[in-house]
Image 1 (cartoon, rainbow, N blue to C red):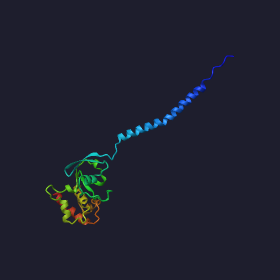
Image 2 (tube, helix red, strand yellow):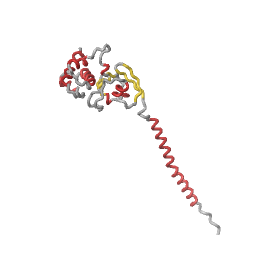
Image 3 (cartoon, rainbow, N blue to C red):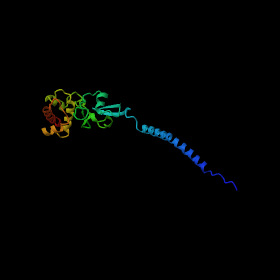
Image 4 (tube, rainbow, N blue to C red):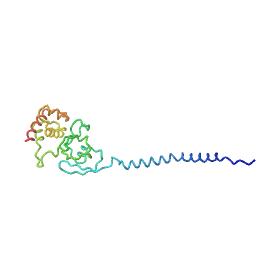
Length: 206
């Protein structure tokens, strides 16, 4: 009887098994390499936020070009990088108003504003008086009406009061109190602050 040829199927199965095993062993290495390359690409497209970035601020009509951590607040840029310490750090949560400055003429809580986001001119208490040293009517009114005691909140109070008048929110005592309610005075000089705003309003409009 002629001899039957050997079935090669078992041999083929062994080869397939070995190939599959080698492929399975290589899969974690390939996956790890791809993950590493992906992470590197993401890191390249998202730079470290702690690295300084160029920031241009116009403060009190002066240009300031700084290199800042992108998370730096406007308050910290003013105080720590430009030496303008008139703006005070009170609660650092936007609740007391001590850090109030004017950005584009609008009152702004500088402790909650990132410096890199500011595009409009900034006015701080240092830039409110005239270039000849003449006090702004609101500054003079705060002195005349004894509208401060410890003075810590006063820069923010004055800048907020200026905006209160220019916004048209100083028509009555109650309106002044309402639109100045975001600025806290722990010395409770509120009645004097109202009188100061009423005095300065006339001079500002004149």
